[in-house]
Length: 121
Image (tube, rainbow, N blue to C red; front, side, top):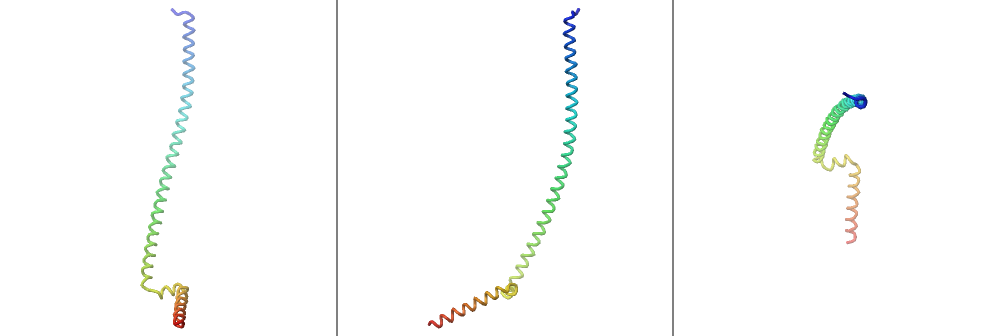
């Protein structure tokens, strides 16, 4: 049979186990709540990631379209440059009157130099 000391030790152990069980249940509830909060947050983050991916895809499409338009503009510009070259100096003078006046000044300076050189001989 058991004596009172053994019964007291057994009771202390049972109470300690009950206390530990209650502590573990409380900790388990807290961890369960934390897990649910983390899962909810994870779901929110996954939605945001998907939205960012969609946004990134849209930005990439816009950049691609813009680059295509830029390529088209560059091609058109290059074609215009090629078309403008055969027209020669008359076109350049019409487009930029300062060029024709600079040429006139240059020509008259050249004539003046020639006349001075002829007179000194």
